[in-house]
Image (cartoon, rainbow, N blue to C red; front, top):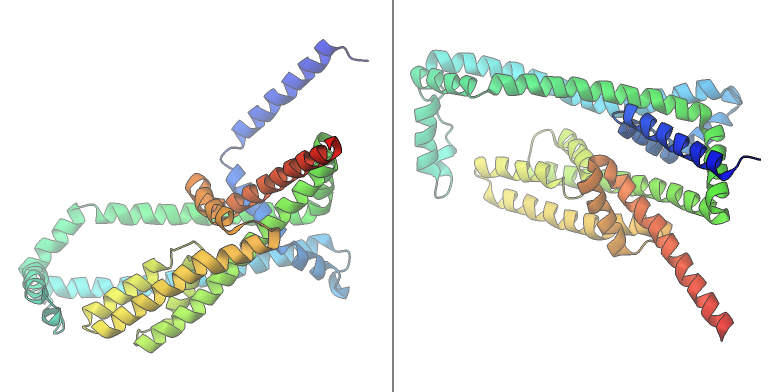
Length: 354
């Protein structure tokens, strides 16, 4: 049998190798975490897909189909939005070319803005009203780093696309080996912490799935309701704006960026009543969804109190970024389970002493 010195040496060696591996893979750990979150959330769908007669026992084909489906669901709307953005960029380029030739007169509604109408019209004329003014303004914008910002945006977009493709590759691996990996994780938890460790792991899995479901359901609901609000307010392309709002709504309070911008457009068009109504409607919807509906959906599934669910969401985002939306409530759920077990142990010991 190995003596204590050998056991300590092995333990130190294992810890050193784990730290070294984490250091080597630290840039890919967030991507792996995203793949695990997606796999946990969609695992019931994956299992249901495998029991179909056409794919029964064909693990690789089932993993490939579901991975491609998830990639399509996420990339198709983004690709459509990027295409519309490029079309608008072409229109903007034509507008800027025309501005340098003849200038752009101020729109008629600009001077109708309350309190700032005359100033806004005068500023527009000074900036774009003539060919000379337009050339001067565009030269200032170019020297101010707009081209550099555009290049940075394109670079960031390419990096995000590569990262997402890497997540899909990792997700495919997790699907293929998920059963074996889950058994290993549960066995390790049982060996380290006993049966309670297995319960904590299952609770963490339920928390991840509940968090994602809560985010998606709230995002879909807010996207549909605010899309109807955009249509009622008379804003063009309400379906696209509703879909964009639904994506942003998965992040608490982020939907304000979309309906707030739409309200500003209505203000610029002189439709003050519609702008105020849309902004008020969006704020009320956001407060109800993010403060009550979302925490109830997440906390109710894992028996996590409202306040800890809310703090887990915001604290996780502040610490881990977007990934913290799912890690924060999961950590809170596990900590709450440990706390309840500790209280139960204290109560049992007190009862036994009495």
